[in-house]
Length: 81
Image (cartoon, rainbow, N blue to C red; front, side, top):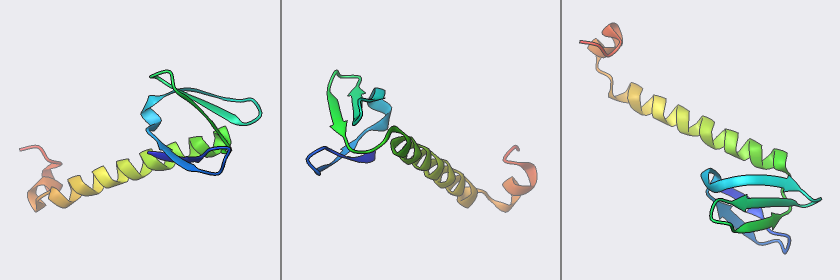
């Protein structure tokens, strides 16, 4: 989920995977796959940074989970037996 701010100052959380497109008009219009759209104060660049950070953190978390579950033998064999 990403956090954006509506024009009235209310925060809203959106599933970034449902974003169909964004455009600057000059506020940012976010159109979702279900046809809903939101006008927000956030720039397209700041929204992109949030998505990149979310994905980066998710990948690091997944790598850490996999590393934590490895046995000493897995570390030597690379997980192949």
